[in-house]
Length: 541
Image 1: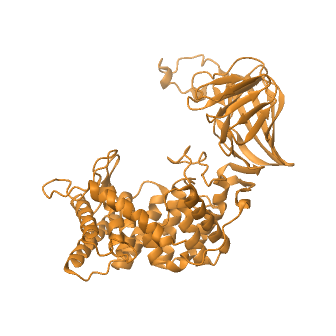
Image 2 (image 1 turned 60 degrees about the vertical axis):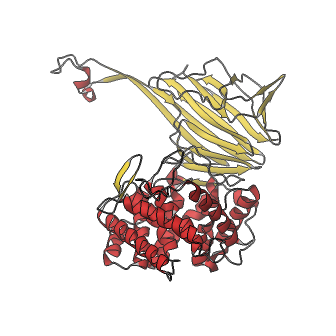
Image 3 (image 1 turned 90 degrees about the horizontal axis):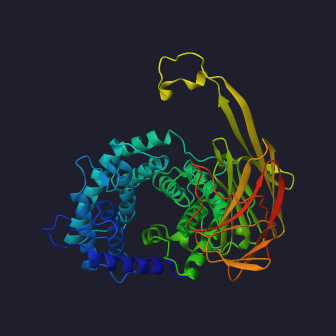
């Protein structure tokens, strides 16, 4: 496949859209920018967008190579960015961050790579290069002085400064990078970064560390990238969508596709001579093309590092998705059987997530016991042929002080000094045992009797639920209490069975403070009262 031509074709479509909406009136305060129906005219977006027409102008494989239209578009976008930089060299992120070095760094990352492609010969090209480098230098000043918000920002700012140091060497850039790197990379032994963001910030961290390795010679950082990329299949479903329910960032609950990691697998694999990594990158590219999703490789990467994208190995096979792995540091378990993938997550109301093709559901544990509302499972660990996890809910009563506390204001009293009594608890253990075609689930409880525990299966709509004597479309917001028997979930292609069901009452709602049932999914319920020992299976048919 001609990777560069595919990437250029995507860039050309985006350039034509940019050109259509670019503001070209010099009297307009937003001159040079472009209008987006969702955000309006945003300097950060406009600055980053300049990368594409700039790359096309200096790319011989593009039909806009040396086309004045592409250069004029890029020049206008850079001018808009220049007009909106603060005197300190930083910019605002329109919705929340002001004088933001991290947001300045993201724009720098977008512009500085294609800036390496600029070979200024004509007066117009030289004028553009001068303006571009002025903007980059001013942004570098802002990043040297200002700070950051989140863990990944340290590496993003460092990578942006490393790129600038290649274009315009400055000892301040290297000194600032060294300050950040002195904190050491926040990647644990499993390969997980602090933000646990498989759908978003893992890619950003890897991107930054790759740049630091390439542009600053910090090749030891490639091992963190390798570690993360080798971990990532824990999160891949068979269509390369990414599991994100354990994320600490805004990608939580989304299902982006993994091809944005393809260039990292190929670049890192090439640098480390690791063909297994490169094979995963090939598989992601082929899946992306086969499904008609936007091509993920950046033309500037293909032009700057052509050797990394040549002679691609055969794609990784289906065994890539057959993953059994416990990420102890992240409180996450991934198991795969019969094409059915299961994830167990600690300390969340929904503690099991399962997916087979279009059949997608979670299991949320609910309890009404004193102030306890959800089974927040902890300590996932191997046990026999499977894995177990546990929860303990506690309750107590307060005794009176017996004397005046210096105030009658309840909220001012020091309740930590009160005696307590009536200490009660409910303990729950869930065991997941893989079998050839799915999983066996066992739930055991001990402690205070008569507390209702419910299991809420949140099923993605548009599957058919089939039971003995009934069929129910799994419409969003619907519900069913399954008191007995096996149920089947059918999406028109695959079938997954669940059961036998159990229910000793009709309690399906938690008390105040509990997460409500999903309005976007069909909600299937099993329930029982403590103490019990229940087993059910989830199988591919």
